[in-house]
Length: 112
Image (tube, rainbow, N blue to C red; front, side, top):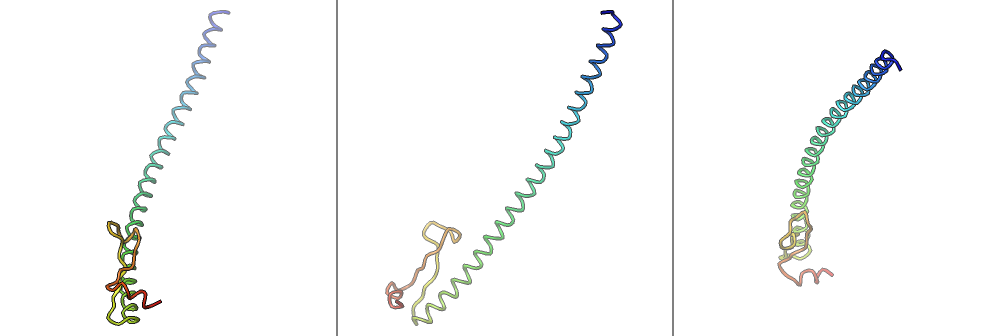
């Protein structure tokens, strides 16, 4: 091949490779932009989940207080002088579960 043809072939290859590199660089930039968007959205979602979890716990505690109050009132109405409450098991939280505690162990048997 002549020197002129080789030179044209090299120019063609260089332009072709340069074009591919430009496409890859643009794709990379686009992917990085999308990654930043996903990371930002993830942070927002995590913040919303934490806030909803806080509100859930607050609502459950508030409901427990009201149910506990009503339960004690109903129990003392059925058995005057007796008292019963809903308490979390030892070493646990209200959110882990509740159990009935009363001041007289015979009181529950009297209701049956």
